[in-house]
Length: 403
Ligand code: ADP
Image (tube, rainbow, N blue to C red; front, side, top):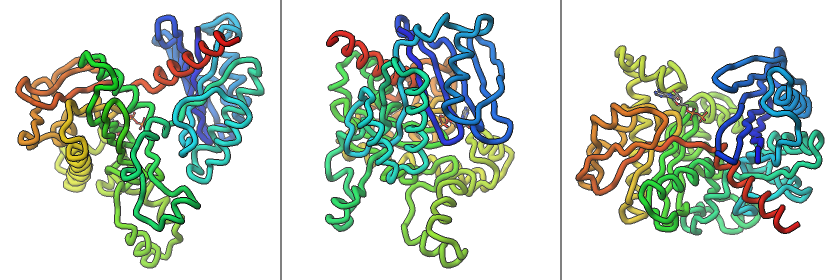
């Protein structure tokens, strides 16, 4: 079966078409600047990339993508019927959704209702779903929630110590994110360890523009660094990560800003970008640091230090781990970041093989710990779309059986 994976944002819509008979990617791309000036659609397949005129609405974007996919000359499928199902990424499933589900009107309404907890993402995700329903009404659709994997966290991990009544009334708690990536690398880790997923005890570090660290016990998330929103946790590309909430009040009064303004600042102007003044991109900051830029060096130090702290916390929570996994753009590609994070942890049983860490073929699973390291260290390339397509296939397969 071929499955279309959609990740809809407010002005973009990323897509991937996968063939699930061999789990291979057929084509992918992004509709950028939807409804803005000069919108474009990129389309990559068989090592080529083409750019098409973009769309004014999400519905138009879906129509255009489908037309490109079935195009007589440039397309990769003969007709829409070849697409057996569509899987949608949704950022916030709250406390309601513990796993991926088949879409019906109630699910869409829930996604919209949960917008209060993810105002930047859920409305756009819902828009993508509604657009697909209109354009392909007979194709089953599935939602894959970023938060679902973390719904196994125990109360003491997800609760904030605020007034219990407010937690109950407003559902203010930790939900986490990147669940699909943490789940995927946990499953891949189980395979390389030769264990059942339920036996995996590990710390997974998803380090990209947004980053989160997760503690995995019995193959399940028992704690994660992101919170009610992705602002909590480690230092990221443009997010500050953990901060004393009083800083918000301080900035409001000293910079004469509203709370919304300061939250926007903490999400978009801080982290690597804010400290270095160079870029939010880890590569750029690394280059600047190599040239002697002290603030760039400090930004990288802050990032590595914050990740190390979470690794240490989760070591304590898990009473040691069998493995530490690095994934995401930085986790998979920056040997410097990995080395900085795990250095001087020998007494916790974590010993990096520096040679292996520096030299391996990218894009594959790699063991980078020394043979005498009690805790194995792996680089595992993430594939959130494949995880989403696997979920979609499983749900649709069962649907076909029960018919
Ligand atoms: P997103 O969170 O948007 O999915 P990615 O997982 O693609 O982001 O990660 C983007 C980050 O990965 C950027 O900071 C980028 O600099 C970093 N990155 C990508 N390739 C490399 C590399 N070769 N070396 C260091 N950092 C890299």
